[in-house]
Image (tube, rainbow, N blue to C red):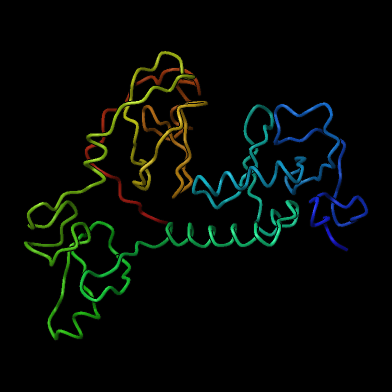
Length: 270
């Protein structure tokens, strides 16, 4: 039995493999009174429509998140149950085009999360940097071809110069950490919905993995890193659960605004 009509993308009420419920759409805080769409129950128990589920999961992908978590409120807190992609694909009734978009982006984001790949400046072969604290990388292909060790700087892509290993720079002129420079010079921003918080840097490095992160200036002060999926406070840079011990989502942090970062955390994956 087809789950949906391909043209209209609606649930088939005769599909006995889904659980349909009469409760409101838990992903839509302002549902239309005229909305009579069928609502299906996710594995976490919350109700969704085809449109709300597709829209929410696509928005997560567009933000760089490939882990689909339920945003519905449960006892005043986010449910955060993880929905397997197979469940999302089925209950959102993804079209062939949507499946292609979802799966390409899931694969791309997963590779970005677990691997640190760049092209060797010599042979253009893609290499993975195993030691994230060392900028001096040796290309085995170039080393084999040249019969001599070929090392280059992961930061400036010039042949390695100076002592090693190093995590800040090599001795080549102009070798600077562009991410650190961005953190140093980025503009400030105002989180308009967070009371009593003045300007803070518009770009932060995730305190867990170092991924560059921006705040869209709407909603609360917390953000979820698109790389490691850790939620942290954009203002004080503490993990959300730590910040909320002495503050709240829309109020100033107890220790104020964290200054501009002068180093980028290295992600120690478990």
